[in-house]
Image (cartoon, rainbow, N blue to C red; front, side):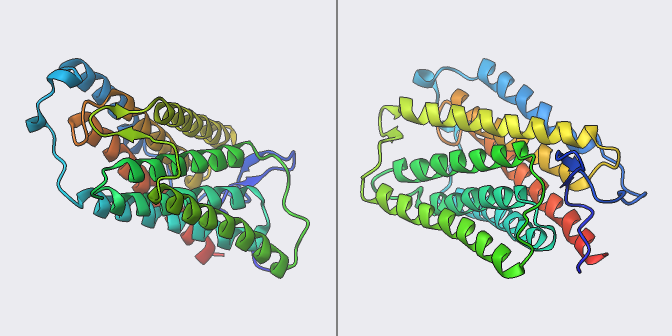
Length: 294
């Protein structure tokens, strides 16, 4: 029987996710430095919101939005890192059967696939509405999965047959990809409600979706943080993961205060999400090391 990955947080005997199956490596200690960007981003958004003029008086000279730059950054820092999280969740679920890993991986896949599509659809002749619709909806789906993952308190799946576990994962991941594909096609055909109107700006629907998404990312971050701090042998994977979720939530919330695409607030929010992607990658890297050492 394969040994469980000690860097992947597992439910304790009381059914609560958050304990690890062993002790963390003695050389690893949580770094407070990597936690600084989270409050720093919040302070920066508040400062820019005070300093920058209102949208009606905002100068385009203060915005920086080169074509295809977002596509490249979204691909590297959001899509790639999310796919890695999905892969590690897949491998770990096959080992230990903890259902919350299926939810975590599905959320990562939703975030990564929609980020990839929206990044490359931003410069359509019809405007950015399609990209914004796909990106924001994908973020909402991802936040729901992450929150469900954080609240999951049941033990491992009773289905120990690897073929059954693989079928469950393929069904979950396949459903996410099918939804992403169908929703993207509907958005391209103009069958979805508008999220952004050229010359007018963001719609009420988009603001509602973004607000809900940012709140759910924040909730899942807090819940994973609570599990990290309440465990005796603290998981390095959990530490990086709750910081990544927090940065992603703050980055999405920054949209509420932006003056125009490419303004300082927009880039502050994007930087938070990109850094969140790096933290996601660090989280799965610690999981990879754990899988390779047992």
